[in-house]
Image 1 (cartoon, helix red, strand yellow):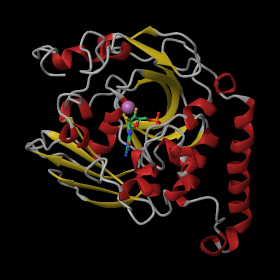
Image 2 (cartoon, helix red, strand yellow; image 1 turned 60 degrees about the horizontal axis):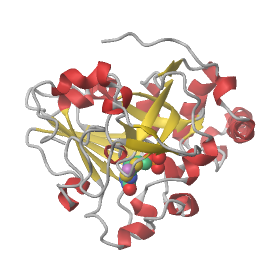
Image 3 (spheres, protein in one colour; image 1 turned 60 degrees about the vertical axis):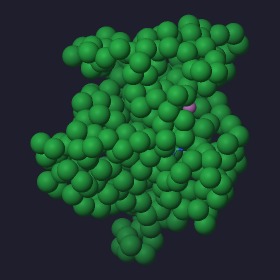
Length: 321
Ligand SMILES: Nc1nc2c(c(=O)[nH]1)N[C@H]1C(S)=C(S)[C@@H](COP(=O)(O)O)O[C@H]1N2
Ligand SMILES: [Mo]
Protein backbone atom coordinates (compact mmCIF):
# COMPACT_ATOMS: atom_id res chain seq x y z
CA UNK A 1 0.00 0.00 0.00
CA UNK A 2 1.30 3.40 -0.99
CA UNK A 3 2.05 5.78 1.89
CA UNK A 4 -0.08 8.88 1.98
CA UNK A 5 1.53 12.30 2.05
CA UNK A 6 0.89 14.20 5.28
CA UNK A 7 0.02 17.04 5.37
CA UNK A 8 -0.12 18.70 2.02
CA UNK A 9 -2.63 21.52 1.83
CA UNK A 10 -3.02 23.90 4.78
CA UNK A 11 -6.66 24.44 5.78
CA UNK A 12 -6.40 28.14 4.90
CA UNK A 13 -5.72 27.21 1.28
CA UNK A 14 -8.68 24.91 0.81
CA UNK A 15 -11.21 26.99 2.72
CA UNK A 16 -12.70 29.84 0.69
CA UNK A 17 -13.58 33.00 2.65
CA UNK A 18 -17.34 32.42 2.61
CA UNK A 19 -16.69 29.29 4.65
CA UNK A 20 -14.90 30.98 7.49
CA UNK A 21 -18.30 32.56 8.11
CA UNK A 22 -20.24 29.31 8.55
CA UNK A 23 -17.35 27.77 10.45
CA UNK A 24 -17.52 30.66 12.90
CA UNK A 25 -21.22 29.93 13.32
CA UNK A 26 -20.49 26.40 14.50
CA UNK A 27 -17.70 27.71 16.73
CA UNK A 28 -20.07 30.14 18.39
CA UNK A 29 -22.30 27.18 19.20
CA UNK A 30 -19.24 25.60 20.79
CA UNK A 31 -18.67 28.65 22.98
CA UNK A 32 -22.28 28.58 24.11
CA UNK A 33 -21.68 25.02 25.20
CA UNK A 34 -18.89 26.16 27.48
CA UNK A 35 -21.11 28.78 29.05
CA UNK A 36 -23.78 26.16 29.64
CA UNK A 37 -21.52 23.97 31.75
CA UNK A 38 -23.82 24.35 34.77
CA UNK A 39 -26.69 22.54 33.10
CA UNK A 40 -25.34 20.92 29.95
CA UNK A 41 -28.40 18.88 29.08
CA UNK A 42 -30.78 21.78 29.46
CA UNK A 43 -28.84 24.44 27.62
CA UNK A 44 -27.49 22.43 24.71
CA UNK A 45 -27.76 24.97 21.89
CA UNK A 46 -30.57 24.03 19.55
CA UNK A 47 -28.43 24.47 16.45
CA UNK A 48 -25.60 22.17 17.52
CA UNK A 49 -26.31 18.45 17.71
CA UNK A 50 -24.38 16.12 20.00
CA UNK A 51 -22.50 14.64 17.05
CA UNK A 52 -21.67 18.12 15.73
CA UNK A 53 -20.24 18.93 19.15
CA UNK A 54 -17.95 15.91 18.95
CA UNK A 55 -16.97 16.72 15.37
CA UNK A 56 -16.21 20.32 16.32
CA UNK A 57 -14.04 19.19 19.22
CA UNK A 58 -11.83 17.28 16.78
CA UNK A 59 -11.87 20.06 14.16
CA UNK A 60 -10.71 22.55 16.80
CA UNK A 61 -7.82 20.28 17.75
CA UNK A 62 -6.69 20.38 14.09
CA UNK A 63 -6.86 17.54 11.59
CA UNK A 64 -4.23 16.18 9.23
CA UNK A 65 -4.97 16.75 5.56
CA UNK A 66 -4.27 14.05 2.98
CA UNK A 67 -4.33 15.13 -0.64
CA UNK A 68 -5.46 12.27 -2.86
CA UNK A 69 -6.47 14.39 -5.82
CA UNK A 70 -2.98 15.09 -7.13
CA UNK A 71 -2.76 18.63 -5.83
CA UNK A 72 -5.77 19.79 -7.77
CA UNK A 73 -7.76 22.61 -6.14
CA UNK A 74 -11.02 21.40 -4.61
CA UNK A 75 -14.27 22.33 -6.32
CA UNK A 76 -15.87 25.33 -4.58
CA UNK A 77 -18.05 24.72 -1.54
CA UNK A 78 -20.90 26.32 -3.42
CA UNK A 79 -20.61 23.97 -6.41
CA UNK A 80 -20.18 20.90 -4.18
CA UNK A 81 -23.36 21.73 -2.25
CA UNK A 82 -25.68 23.05 -4.95
CA UNK A 83 -25.19 20.41 -7.65
CA UNK A 84 -26.13 17.10 -6.04
CA UNK A 85 -27.74 13.73 -6.50
CA UNK A 86 -29.92 12.78 -3.53
CA UNK A 87 -33.09 11.21 -4.90
CA UNK A 88 -34.74 11.06 -1.47
CA UNK A 89 -35.04 14.84 -1.90
CA UNK A 90 -35.92 14.87 -5.62
CA UNK A 91 -34.26 14.09 -8.92
CA UNK A 92 -33.22 17.65 -9.88
CA UNK A 93 -29.64 18.74 -9.21
CA UNK A 94 -30.83 21.67 -7.08
CA UNK A 95 -33.53 19.70 -5.20
CA UNK A 96 -31.16 18.36 -2.52
CA UNK A 97 -30.14 21.89 -1.51
CA UNK A 98 -33.67 23.27 -1.69
CA UNK A 99 -35.22 20.45 0.36
CA UNK A 100 -32.20 19.75 2.59
CA UNK A 101 -34.23 20.62 5.73
CA UNK A 102 -36.39 17.51 5.18
CA UNK A 103 -33.50 15.37 6.44
CA UNK A 104 -33.69 15.32 10.24
CA UNK A 105 -30.24 14.45 11.62
CA UNK A 106 -30.73 14.99 15.35
CA UNK A 107 -30.50 12.54 17.00
CA UNK A 108 -28.68 10.11 14.68
CA UNK A 109 -27.68 6.56 15.36
CA UNK A 110 -26.07 3.88 13.27
CA UNK A 111 -26.92 0.19 13.48
CA UNK A 112 -24.07 -2.23 12.81
CA UNK A 113 -25.28 -5.81 12.60
CA UNK A 114 -25.24 -9.13 10.76
CA UNK A 115 -21.98 -11.06 10.68
CA UNK A 116 -20.19 -9.15 13.47
CA UNK A 117 -19.44 -10.18 17.04
CA UNK A 118 -20.26 -6.69 18.37
CA UNK A 119 -23.59 -5.75 16.84
CA UNK A 120 -25.76 -2.91 18.08
CA UNK A 121 -27.20 0.54 17.53
CA UNK A 122 -24.88 3.38 18.47
CA UNK A 123 -25.34 7.14 18.84
CA UNK A 124 -23.26 8.88 16.18
CA UNK A 125 -21.47 11.02 18.80
CA UNK A 126 -20.29 7.84 20.54
CA UNK A 127 -18.95 6.43 17.27
CA UNK A 128 -17.11 9.69 16.53
CA UNK A 129 -15.52 9.75 19.99
CA UNK A 130 -13.68 6.56 19.05
CA UNK A 131 -12.55 7.66 15.60
CA UNK A 132 -9.66 9.95 14.78
CA UNK A 133 -10.88 12.18 11.99
CA UNK A 134 -8.81 13.43 9.10
CA UNK A 135 -9.35 15.57 6.03
CA UNK A 136 -9.01 13.79 2.69
CA UNK A 137 -9.24 15.38 -0.71
CA UNK A 138 -10.71 12.97 -3.25
CA UNK A 139 -12.07 13.10 -6.77
CA UNK A 140 -15.75 12.12 -7.04
CA UNK A 141 -16.93 10.85 -10.46
CA UNK A 142 -20.65 10.39 -11.08
CA UNK A 143 -21.82 7.75 -13.57
CA UNK A 144 -23.56 10.64 -15.38
CA UNK A 145 -20.08 11.92 -16.42
CA UNK A 146 -19.69 14.92 -14.13
CA UNK A 147 -17.10 15.14 -11.35
CA UNK A 148 -15.90 17.16 -8.38
CA UNK A 149 -12.86 17.39 -6.11
CA UNK A 150 -14.04 17.24 -2.51
CA UNK A 151 -12.23 17.91 0.78
CA UNK A 152 -14.02 15.41 3.04
CA UNK A 153 -13.61 15.03 6.78
CA UNK A 154 -13.97 11.44 7.91
CA UNK A 155 -12.36 8.19 8.96
CA UNK A 156 -11.62 4.86 7.26
CA UNK A 157 -14.59 2.49 7.27
CA UNK A 158 -12.13 -0.34 8.05
CA UNK A 159 -11.50 1.09 11.52
CA UNK A 160 -15.19 1.07 12.34
CA UNK A 161 -15.76 -2.42 10.95
CA UNK A 162 -12.78 -3.88 12.83
CA UNK A 163 -14.07 -2.44 16.09
CA UNK A 164 -17.26 -4.48 15.61
CA UNK A 165 -15.33 -7.67 14.83
CA UNK A 166 -16.57 -9.17 11.55
CA UNK A 167 -17.03 -12.96 11.68
CA UNK A 168 -15.35 -15.29 9.19
CA UNK A 169 -18.65 -15.47 7.29
CA UNK A 170 -18.72 -11.73 6.49
CA UNK A 171 -18.18 -11.44 2.72
CA UNK A 172 -20.19 -8.32 1.81
CA UNK A 173 -21.09 -5.06 3.52
CA UNK A 174 -24.58 -3.64 2.98
CA UNK A 175 -25.38 0.03 3.63
CA UNK A 176 -28.82 1.52 4.07
CA UNK A 177 -29.87 5.19 3.95
CA UNK A 178 -32.47 7.06 5.95
CA UNK A 179 -36.09 5.99 5.35
CA UNK A 180 -38.54 8.76 6.24
CA UNK A 181 -41.23 9.03 3.54
CA UNK A 182 -43.37 11.33 5.73
CA UNK A 183 -40.70 14.00 5.44
CA UNK A 184 -38.62 13.10 2.37
CA UNK A 185 -40.54 14.16 -0.72
CA UNK A 186 -38.51 11.90 -3.00
CA UNK A 187 -39.45 8.80 -1.02
CA UNK A 188 -43.11 9.26 -1.86
CA UNK A 189 -42.25 8.39 -5.45
CA UNK A 190 -41.00 4.97 -6.47
CA UNK A 191 -37.95 6.11 -8.42
CA UNK A 192 -36.03 3.51 -6.43
CA UNK A 193 -37.12 0.78 -4.05
CA UNK A 194 -36.53 2.73 -0.80
CA UNK A 195 -34.52 2.83 1.35
CA UNK A 196 -31.46 3.40 -0.84
CA UNK A 197 -29.13 0.43 -0.48
CA UNK A 198 -25.52 -0.10 -1.52
CA UNK A 199 -23.19 -3.07 -1.22
CA UNK A 200 -19.41 -3.53 -1.22
CA UNK A 201 -17.28 -6.64 -1.10
CA UNK A 202 -15.63 -6.89 2.32
CA UNK A 203 -12.15 -6.28 0.85
CA UNK A 204 -13.42 -3.12 -0.85
CA UNK A 205 -15.02 -1.99 2.40
CA UNK A 206 -11.78 -2.64 4.31
CA UNK A 207 -9.62 -0.81 1.76
CA UNK A 208 -7.86 2.18 3.36
CA UNK A 209 -9.29 4.58 0.74
CA UNK A 210 -12.89 3.72 1.71
CA UNK A 211 -14.06 6.55 3.92
CA UNK A 212 -17.00 7.36 6.15
CA UNK A 213 -17.39 11.13 5.78
CA UNK A 214 -18.98 13.41 8.37
CA UNK A 215 -17.68 16.73 7.12
CA UNK A 216 -16.91 18.84 4.10
CA UNK A 217 -14.53 21.84 3.90
CA UNK A 218 -13.88 21.65 7.63
CA UNK A 219 -17.47 21.73 8.83
CA UNK A 220 -20.20 19.16 9.35
CA UNK A 221 -21.71 17.77 6.13
CA UNK A 222 -24.55 19.86 4.76
CA UNK A 223 -27.71 17.74 4.59
CA UNK A 224 -27.71 17.72 0.78
CA UNK A 225 -24.24 16.15 0.88
CA UNK A 226 -25.43 13.20 2.94
CA UNK A 227 -25.49 14.35 6.56
CA UNK A 228 -24.66 13.32 9.09
CA UNK A 229 -22.59 10.40 7.79
CA UNK A 230 -22.04 8.98 4.31
CA UNK A 231 -19.84 6.53 2.52
CA UNK A 232 -17.16 7.70 0.05
CA UNK A 233 -15.58 5.14 -2.30
CA UNK A 234 -13.46 7.34 -4.56
CA UNK A 235 -12.60 4.79 -7.28
CA UNK A 236 -16.26 3.90 -7.95
CA UNK A 237 -19.06 5.84 -9.60
CA UNK A 238 -20.73 8.23 -7.17
CA UNK A 239 -23.88 6.17 -6.69
CA UNK A 240 -21.90 3.70 -4.56
CA UNK A 241 -21.13 6.55 -2.11
CA UNK A 242 -24.40 6.23 -0.23
CA UNK A 243 -25.61 9.17 1.86
CA UNK A 244 -27.20 9.57 5.30
CA UNK A 245 -26.36 6.02 6.37
CA UNK A 246 -28.43 4.48 9.20
CA UNK A 247 -27.38 0.86 8.96
CA UNK A 248 -24.34 -1.24 8.04
CA UNK A 249 -24.93 -4.99 7.81
CA UNK A 250 -22.24 -7.59 7.15
CA UNK A 251 -23.55 -10.58 5.23
CA UNK A 252 -22.46 -13.80 3.57
CA UNK A 253 -24.65 -13.59 0.45
CA UNK A 254 -24.65 -10.51 -1.75
CA UNK A 255 -27.99 -8.66 -2.03
CA UNK A 256 -28.68 -6.33 -4.98
CA UNK A 257 -27.84 -2.65 -4.69
CA UNK A 258 -30.74 -0.25 -5.30
CA UNK A 259 -29.43 0.93 -8.66
CA UNK A 260 -28.46 -2.55 -9.74
CA UNK A 261 -31.96 -3.74 -8.91
CA UNK A 262 -33.38 -0.84 -10.92
CA UNK A 263 -31.24 -1.46 -14.00
CA UNK A 264 -28.36 -3.96 -13.87
CA UNK A 265 -27.20 -3.18 -17.43
CA UNK A 266 -26.69 0.48 -16.64
CA UNK A 267 -25.57 0.34 -13.00
CA UNK A 268 -23.44 -2.70 -12.32
CA UNK A 269 -22.51 -3.99 -8.89
CA UNK A 270 -18.84 -3.02 -9.17
CA UNK A 271 -19.35 0.41 -10.73
CA UNK A 272 -15.59 0.96 -10.87
CA UNK A 273 -14.81 4.14 -12.79
CA UNK A 274 -13.58 2.91 -16.17
CA UNK A 275 -13.15 5.13 -19.25
CA UNK A 276 -13.09 1.99 -21.45
CA UNK A 277 -16.50 0.64 -20.48
CA UNK A 278 -19.29 2.84 -21.76
CA UNK A 279 -22.65 3.26 -20.11
CA UNK A 280 -25.26 1.84 -22.53
CA UNK A 281 -26.50 5.39 -23.20
CA UNK A 282 -23.25 7.41 -23.19
CA UNK A 283 -19.46 7.27 -23.29
CA UNK A 284 -17.52 7.19 -20.03
CA UNK A 285 -14.25 8.31 -21.65
CA UNK A 286 -14.59 11.94 -20.57
CA UNK A 287 -16.20 13.96 -17.83
CA UNK A 288 -17.22 17.50 -16.94
CA UNK A 289 -15.64 18.89 -13.78
CA UNK A 290 -18.29 21.00 -12.05
CA UNK A 291 -17.19 24.65 -12.16
CA UNK A 292 -15.03 24.12 -15.26
CA UNK A 293 -15.81 24.50 -18.93
CA UNK A 294 -14.82 21.79 -21.36
CA UNK A 295 -14.23 18.17 -20.56
CA UNK A 296 -11.37 16.13 -19.23
CA UNK A 297 -10.30 12.55 -19.68
CA UNK A 298 -11.73 10.10 -17.19
CA UNK A 299 -9.01 8.20 -15.33
CA UNK A 300 -8.99 4.43 -14.80
CA UNK A 301 -10.40 3.75 -11.32
CA UNK A 302 -10.85 7.53 -11.15
CA UNK A 303 -7.08 7.90 -10.75
CA UNK A 304 -6.76 5.39 -7.91
CA UNK A 305 -5.57 2.40 -9.98
CA UNK A 306 -2.26 2.16 -8.15
CA UNK A 307 -4.13 1.67 -4.88
CA UNK A 308 -7.03 -0.55 -5.99
CA UNK A 309 -6.37 -2.32 -9.30
CA UNK A 310 -5.10 -5.42 -7.45
CA UNK A 311 -8.57 -5.96 -5.97
CA UNK A 312 -9.84 -6.79 -9.47
CA UNK A 313 -6.86 -8.56 -11.03
CA UNK A 314 -8.88 -11.75 -11.62
CA UNK A 315 -11.93 -10.01 -13.09
CA UNK A 316 -12.79 -9.22 -16.69
CA UNK A 317 -13.65 -5.55 -16.24
CA UNK A 318 -15.66 -5.43 -19.49
CA UNK A 319 -17.99 -8.02 -18.06
CA UNK A 320 -17.88 -7.17 -14.33
CA UNK A 321 -18.67 -3.46 -14.61
N1 LIG B 1 -29.02 7.95 -0.21
C1 LIG B 1 -28.51 8.37 -1.38
N2 LIG B 1 -27.20 8.35 -1.58
C2 LIG B 1 -26.67 8.79 -2.75
C3 LIG B 1 -27.52 9.22 -3.80
C4 LIG B 1 -28.93 9.22 -3.57
O1 LIG B 1 -29.74 9.59 -4.43
N3 LIG B 1 -29.38 8.80 -2.34
N4 LIG B 1 -26.96 9.60 -5.00
C5 LIG B 1 -25.64 9.04 -5.32
C6 LIG B 1 -25.04 9.62 -6.51
S1 LIG B 1 -25.69 9.11 -7.99
C7 LIG B 1 -23.94 10.41 -6.47
S2 LIG B 1 -23.15 10.91 -7.88
C8 LIG B 1 -23.43 10.93 -5.18
C9 LIG B 1 -23.43 12.43 -5.25
O2 LIG B 1 -22.86 13.01 -4.10
P1 LIG B 1 -22.90 14.59 -3.97
O3 LIG B 1 -24.30 15.04 -4.22
O4 LIG B 1 -22.47 14.87 -2.56
O5 LIG B 1 -21.95 15.13 -4.99
O6 LIG B 1 -24.22 10.51 -4.07
C10 LIG B 1 -24.68 9.18 -4.15
N5 LIG B 1 -25.32 8.79 -2.91
MO1 LIG C 1 -24.12 9.63 -9.58
